Amino acid sequence: VTMVAACLLIDLPRVRRAIYLLAPRSRRPRMVLLTDEILDRVGGYVLGNLLLSVIAAALTIAWALIFGIPYALLQGLLVGLLDLIPVIGSTIGGIIVSVVALTVSLPVAIATGAFYAVYRFLEDYLLTPRIMKRTVAVPGLVTVLATVLGGALLGIVGALVAIPVAAAVKLLHDEITLPRLEDS
Image (cartoon, rainbow, N blue to C red):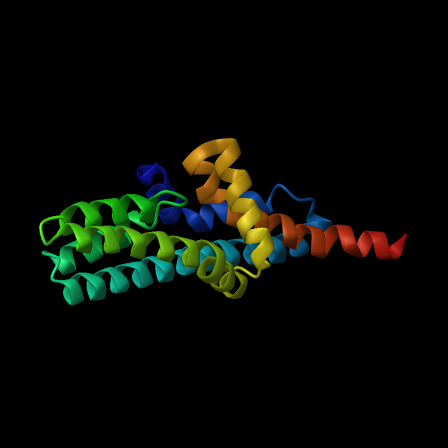
């Protein structure tokens, strides 16, 4: 998957031109605008996802330093990387940090598990909808529903692509369907 993504990024201008050629010449300028807007929203999604991962990493480092959990920086980086995996990433990271917290004490490990449960809830229902609303221009409720539906239908891959797909569908709906309904 990463090899395909890397090749796609390297060859993005050619891929864009090929997509543009799929539209009839009379509709091509509009196709260019819509495609560019969709790609901008996908970029916004990636940026928003990275921001969420940085937040998870920073909070993990702070928590580990406050409670003396070993390897605070390494654990923060691990949680940040795992948080890039939708739905389950930060949960797996939280479990790992909680297990390492057992080396400090059982109460610290339990508190760490509770911290990640609260963080997970706040990330899913507060941070993600707000950040995605700003970076992808998708309403918070649609963000939550798209992620849940994508995850239920296609697992991790579905959850990963759910928000960009929702952004593309919303854009096409706003730019094509609504004007047609208004004209009829």
